[in-house]
Length: 366
Image 1 (tube, rainbow, N blue to C red):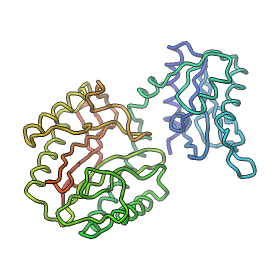
Image 2 (cartoon, rainbow, N blue to C red; image 1 turned 120 degrees about the vertical axis):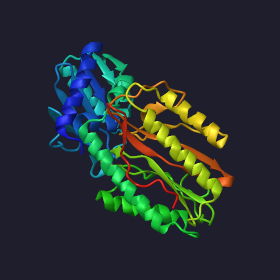
Image 3 (tube, rainbow, N blue to C red; image 1 turned 180 degrees about the horizontal axis):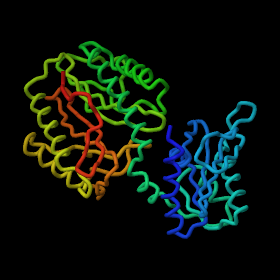
């Protein structure tokens, strides 16, 4: 889990925004944000809330019981279940507790995230609520050591899944069987269930998608696995592609060579201060020169508590890389002549000197 030590450091960075915006407090109700600042991960069945006041004191509203060992100065429970039945009005119950706490501190100007809890707060609170979502997203870009450790654990799950996939992918294997087997490997490697639905792509002979009923792999096809196992709230996201019969064609090998070269372009260019748009443009031009077609989707994106975060390697955003953030690069080429297509994706951590790859599994088609 996230640590109390680093969550308190994250609170200090949030406190700077409170002071700059001249707010009395900040309230977050999104489960990821509650976890980020409190070091406690809510169940997907439960709502919760976290409040940071302008004096640096903090409050966690938790379901049913007082949660020990959190980064909150005070923890107050609310009834999330009545005789074991989940209450549908949990967001309102959390908001009522927060309104009471804000009133007790005479807080009138409050920053909020976009969440079910905050929406209820806005309707019940007599003071003013201001969105600070943009600031929170930016604060989350650079990963602390406890976040990096959890993401590396998630990535190790993905590597174990690829190793198993290479063993079981043969002509005739069913997509649903591959998915089920890889789900099992991920859970065994993590030592606990995933904290989110196992994503992302599990289709053979296709650019991607969920596993299909009664669809089996065929000789000559390529099997794209874009895997996103999660560990204690944090996502990984990387992709490998396997030749089903271990006999890639000349066209498939040409595409593979172009895609691996695209990853090298990212590794050579990426460093603090580089624009995501420029990375996208460089890879897009590379594909036009080598494959006569450009990128058909984004080049990559940040990853962390959500599968897609800042920075965006995408011409629709103008993000600049920052030291300490983690992003994916996922160049791909698709088409019937490729037996579906190839996508290769690595996660990278931005360092002072450039980037380091966090994924150790080979890129080979076989």
